[in-house]
Image (cartoon, rainbow, N blue to C red; front, side, top):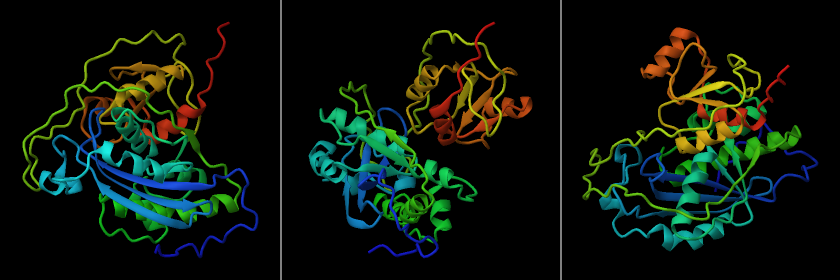
Length: 332
């Protein structure tokens, strides 16, 4: 049973009729962040329309490859031995998600991983909308120091027992989501729901399958952030200058990316291009914005951004800005 920590937020007398009828709070642990990485554990807390827990479910998953960063999730090849493959749990997972809004912390990442697994299994996840608790915390104006799950949990007094364990992360998120949902309903706040577009086909490129991995060691895992450059169409809009914090992105702005992203980098760049932004492969004095999840890193782009005074935001904030890009000014 989840602890009730919602005394500071009373339930509204009239629940917004436009709110969803049920939610599936999800967390997945994975072998990494890249397109060919796999789910190795998954957890779902099903909640009713008002955020009350109905039940929960958890499973390990055989990724059919090296388990990746064991030092983060603790799931070695030995632990995963005998676990079902994703295709074996796809039906049960789907039953937990069906007719509900998928809720996750940085939901774009969880959804992409889930959609890819279902595409590999030649099936489709029964999810049509998702809600990111990072986006919801911004809509509510919560005074958080950052957008980590632990910060959201601390704000609502939720105690984390085992970070990076899918079941405990899902429990923590469910506990934090319930008062967030009630606060949104009490203030008649529009929920930041986004469409989930299932993948209809999948072509696997060779994924590493390293030998059995000793507990806790690095084994054969290597970050997979390198990828070949891809030629993109020329942006048809002139560069309107630098992004100003608190304002909208404008078509034609030059956007650079640095470091790992939870959404596959090519997909993120495609979204930016479709919104009318210029995706830059390097950073210069005319770059409008740098997107990175690690602004303290010493990559060349981050260093140049500091030198040039280029604005820097994280991936979650960039995703929100992409929802409402200002059209380019008409050419006179």
